[in-house]
View 1 (cartoon, each protein chain N blue to C red):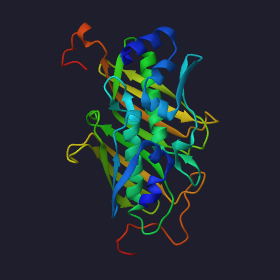
View 2 (cartoon, rainbow over the protein chains, first blue to last red):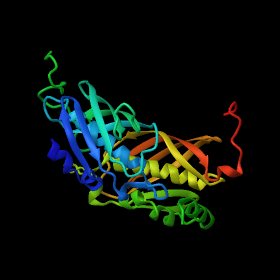
View 3 (tube, one colour):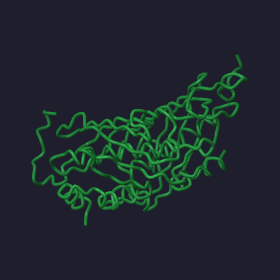
Length: 153
Length: 158
């Protein structure tokens, strides 16, 4: 999965790295780079770079929560910017997938510099499971996706 | 030239491209802006490095989110009577359909512009404007670029 995520063209273009995948959890790193700057006067990263990081990390947390791999698609992502990112510093993200329902998975994530308890941004997201080209729902024939390690019905 | 100076220049000339080109992340996304019948349309030119799902293929949600946030900010630049540097407080993106490997356009509408906070709705579409690929609503802190010229408002009013 690490290789899969890092080979996504946009993740690669931004310089994202996967630092940890655990059950229903993912940690990514976005290294500070001049090309990601949104305000050339201050050197502060563009909000869009944080959006991409949180979206990718949240998606990886969903994959890390699934028993069997199914395609997913972001339904919605809300990002609160808690304070400005500091110029020159790398940004870490930690996402957890706290619920996998039959068709939809729910995530929470934070972006931070050094201290996860003092985040730059936080997000909540929802993801559609088992999407097919065109975006409609397409549940796998083997049944709905389940949270890894969850009791079987 | 500072960003504020570029912004003042863009407001004067109506040419927002130089402003976009001064922002590294706008260049990375391949953004361009043009006025069309009094609408400021922001376009993200398709490039392979914007792909988030190679199987479909589809644009990365982060690229679409960044386009929407950028278009919202450009709309604030364009509509605001004074020069402000909006700071995003929160943005909620709804992904409606997968973004294909083609150019994507976006336009924001300022639903409310208060003295401290502005609310903006944004839509992004590809070939068919009536079938948006993603929409967002965003809330910005709108701090005047030259705060020294205006005393801060009383804390009691909003």
